[in-house]
Length: 47
Image 1: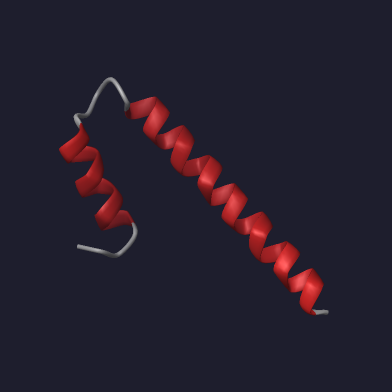
Image 2: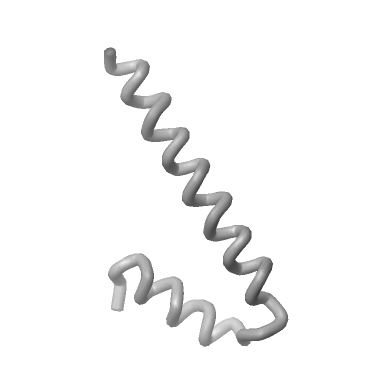
């Protein structure tokens, strides 16, 4: 049971990692680093 939970968690993390990479790749030429860092902190509850 624990093993399946860990697999599910790792799958979710992989999905969100892919989404973040896609997000940053898409906006790479539109935003500078400071703006991307600000968006990242807001979307992840750091700001």
